[in-house]
Length: 121
Image (cartoon, rainbow, N blue to C red):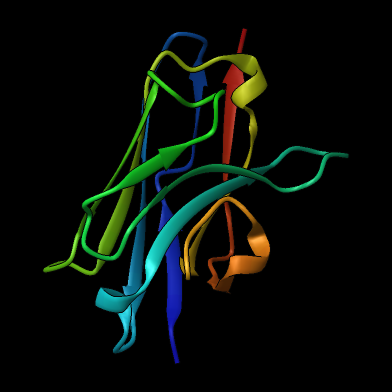
């Protein structure tokens, strides 16, 4: 069984930075793509970024390009989301996920519990 645990939640002022981490336990980390999604109150879960199993390719939502960076450390079984120049509209619960990859939540079969990011104006 694969388990994902996010950390790095926090309250930050607009323009600030946060780094989210997602630690995975289980035996298939190295063969799964990893993604970050977010969900704001009253809104659907949306894609933020993903990275292929070999870290060769990364993909970003338009809202994240140039500000967020996804990376993974296979030795530590951890994926990261570095978020810079945060905006109030980035406020959401952020989820990491493991699966086939892509921007659709349906492509991921394992999910973390979510971590709250709040950006004040």
